[in-house]
Amino acid sequence: VVDDGSWNREDVAPVHQEFARDSRFNLILLQKNVGKRKAQIAAIRCSSGDLVLNVDSDTILASDMVGKLALRMQDAAIGAAMGQLTASNRNATWLTGLIDMEYWLACNEERAAQARFGAVMCCCGPCAMYRRSALDLLLDQYEAQYFRGKPSDLGEDRHLTILMLKAGFRTEYVSDAYAATLVPDRLAPYLRQQLRWARSTFRDTLLALRLLPGLDPYLTLDVIGQNLGPLLLAFSVVTGMAQVAVTGTVPWWTVLTIASMTLVRCAVAALRARQLRFLAFSLHTPINIFLLLPVKAYALCTLSNSDWLSR
Image (cartoon, rainbow, N blue to C red; front, side):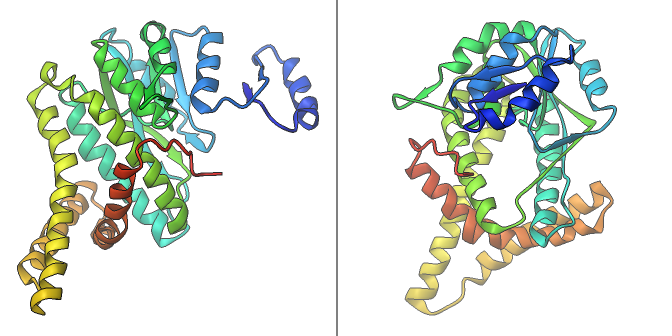
């Protein structure tokens, strides 16, 4: 258990003392706040298991999740494996319901497809298992990540996954190892989260480009699609708005193309998941166009900013 420089150390001292008497716990008291990545590294270096499970503070693990990830990790070629994420508060608001569907699609489309070619590009922080022998090789690189001369603390899960692939290990997705995590229930926290994730994605995509020639060609197609797709969508929206402003006419072909692609994607997801609620994921399209695309553009212009944005 890592106390990352709590300012109220005297108040929590009784808690530390209580758990210090339990042999199952090892307390690490850092003298100053060093952030999630360095606190995580301190815990890894003091632990001794062959496998290291990384979870977030708001993660709820299914009772068989650890066993299923460990079973997959019996293959020595696998450096990391992640489970399937759901939103523990998916019924709280309309937004948490959309995010839960977004997680399903990210896991069962994107990660599942990447796993077929042995290279999940991001083993998500809420539930990822790592091989200690691989971590021993990578911790110094992981701790010393810099971007434009400044220490980089964002996107620790994506960066560690990229380092695993760079070292020659496979990364896997285990679809029946479930973990639930708390997601933002309001737009402002959601957009701050997306801004942080976008910055880390752009940073580590530059590092991942060097890996692609050694991976299956599908991964190159995947990375290009994920980065080029939003640019093409943004270009379509901007040119459509310009047409309205200049000619006073509505770009119906653009509107119909985006609408039809949205309906096809949601229908396929509803069919695969056997849940009609995925038809409502079409509401994510206007959020993506009018909110997330501007956030990603802003992230690209402010890549040097490492603010965690959640405090």
